Image 1 (cartoon, rainbow, N blue to C red):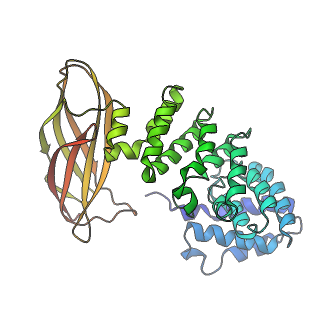
Image 2 (tube, rainbow, N blue to C red; image 1 turned 120 degrees about the vertical axis):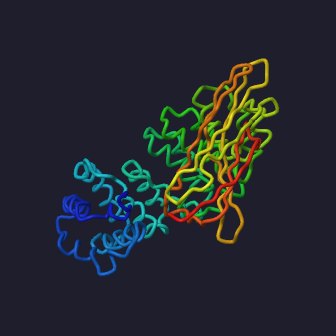
Image 3 (tube, rainbow, N blue to C red; image 1 turned 90 degrees about the vertical axis):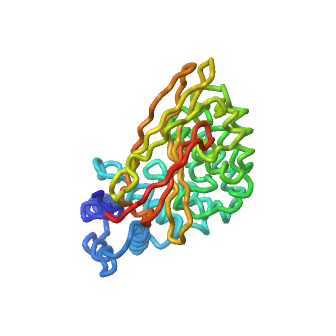
Length: 368
């Protein structure tokens, strides 16, 4: 079983963090710092609660003036790079959280701090309240960051401005008007860093959920600029492809009219929670020329209210030769995860070819 993320805030982490902090705060009482971390409530805290708690304890030991505290954090960064070698940087998100909590009223100081900190650990969450309060100024700053020498700062420009950034504070203006962030994405579409380009694709995918026509136009505009931009467009269109959006399917040359699917078999008509659903089917390219075929399957999960909830999974996408016939086997494991509750009863599964559902069947999900 994977270690819970909250356990990144461990005695080993706090030991190294306190060592680094003592280099920039010589008067630090390390034992008292650790003592205030491990309150009776600490064990019951989840990841973000431990992060915020640690930032608040850190504040008790920092200079009272925010500008002085930021100066300490900037001095702390190289110490942490040295001290944290071999450890995950995730718990250091307490530093951008510190800026979010204590620096919202000091825009200039905080923006400079964010630019420095994000080169150690991402500030994508911390930047959100600044986008809400200082929308125009912050977007202008992020446009400047898109030209930064550091790929981490460039990524912050795209990732921090996503309209639907997961687990982050919502910024309604970004969701309403994608034109606010498209100039940032335009600057970064040819970025040399794959990490940055992937962030651009994720931002496009967010926009597609609310403004599909905007992403369709970007796909047309960017197509063929480079192999990298083509990859961005494809990854940024993944939700539209899963939805079977007609125009995006045409854009990628995906046509289901001359592909046949036969003999869908539900090999495991009864599946236990923790077990496997196995399906098999045959498809054929009926054209006398080669064509691209995108294969997906959809699971229709039974919900508590008795309705079905659809989730699409990709199988493959490749060129099929004229008349080519292929039998496909697919396995889906009903692994117990924290983000989904399984309800026993009749579920359904369908096979989707180039965005079009071709066959559908049902199976029973049973208790483990």
